[in-house]
Image 1: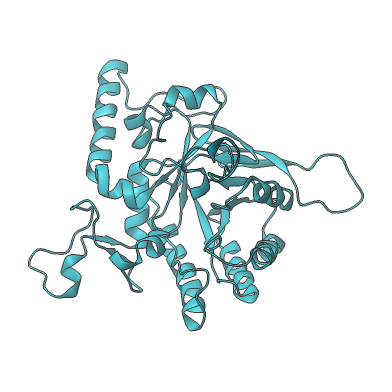
Image 2 (image 1 turned 30 degrees about the horizontal axis):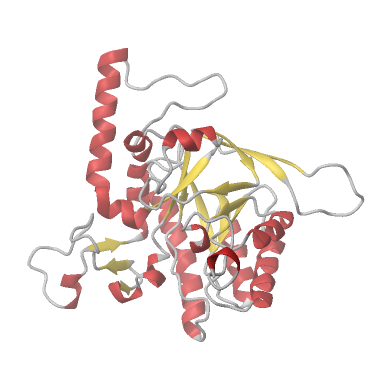
Length: 334
């Protein structure tokens, strides 16, 4: 499980970064490069599971922060327990057997809740440090969020007083992995310390080193390594030296099966964006998966794939489910 076989096409006499491949995961093989639709709370808006299957979608993305709040870790674990009990009664055994092609009929967590039989990638909740900055407090321990739903997985202790009492969700690296174990994602992302891409000064390096330390804590916390693999997230802002150092350190962690470029597409100039992506490409192991997050346009997707980044994820531009740009001041809309 979690093996990757790549294909670089015919020999050209010069090194080529572009590649296709097959990444074997518990809920089926992943043909790369691949586009991952975003299902923040476990389901895509306006699209059914049947429609996803008809479109041959092989993986979707869910968010640990949102799923940890609602439906919550307890409910996800209880659903899995009930499903396992029903299977045991019906089949006379605890788990269904493996298919001949190695695909595990493992409908735990969000797979069971949504009826989704293929793969899931779970984001760690780190991006919410930026998107929900006003609701978050970041320390070496982790990040404390004020719940947007009035409840949480890990709450402030009863009787706790002071500023921290208003933060209802404590998300440490260990908590992030524990919740992701409950969600049942085939690929789990580490909890990283995310700063806005335009941040300058010592905070950028602090976040980079903290992300490395948190990766070690995520690796140690993973209780389901046989069925859920872990990816590291490269931080370092717009400073190439920090990006390379971060990737250099993370590559040493052999428990990581892939890496993502974190903290980009937040308002930086496009030439700066390309420079950072290219820098990270230089240190990306060819035996690992590379994830490019929310890059914004089809043109950018077409450009990063030839550099060897195999998993591509939608951005806010895709949220309205549009086919492209239209101007209300021209043509039929004017």
